[in-house]
Length: 317
Image: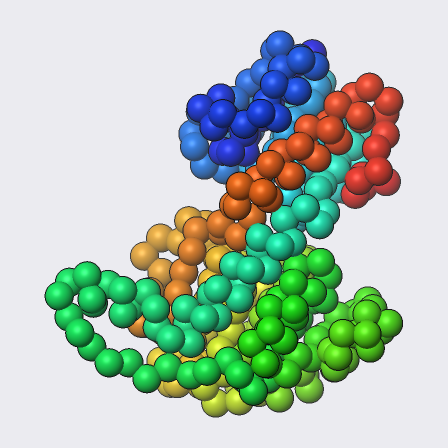
């Protein structure tokens, strides 16, 4: 049984112990030669003859399904599946699974790390000090500030816990908010407009879909406090980057922490001219613990579907 494996942390050179489990199931494994997410045409070429596919951040389109008739299951390495055409998968009889919750600690901690880096201009100060400088930069403290978390799923809850540890006042917006959890953990439930207007910091943890694309647009940014900080460790399309650029230039945004971009990798992004922008390469889930957990669950999902036709984490039933 032929299987394509594209996540960079599941390649032969990674030394992942999870690969041994996959090799025990199938000796015919195809790996990612590019060291990055594959394009549509690269996916099609690599998937020929494959029944299973452990997928990283590749774009999996209608065209992919049309040209890969042997494919039975796509096991997403991670919780997000916005780069998979679920309707096309269902139409072609391909099951899609994901790995919810296993990277929540890693992504949530990085999101809060981005906030701290923006608040104290840590990357800028590091570069200057290494270059022989000894500059002073006046940042801000998190203590006492208001943070609004957009999307209170597993990752948003980690951010809330971190924020409360720093003495921040936490509010959250989520269309499917867990009211009991919020009451038990002193999280104020808010609407979207109210939440972003009242917060000193807004942290995004929403899925990427048509209803959330550019949810942080020019209008939303203009409604924020002057100097508010925006953190996105979710999906790049949630923020209108052109509007964010203008807001950083005017001072309406006081800082931006990004682990996700509209184009990845971002090529010559105009956002990078600002010292109060901190950027990381969509690395939120890349801790030793999360990498192992995602790899393990994605491989288990794949094997279970190929053996039984189902598993717990199917997203396109």
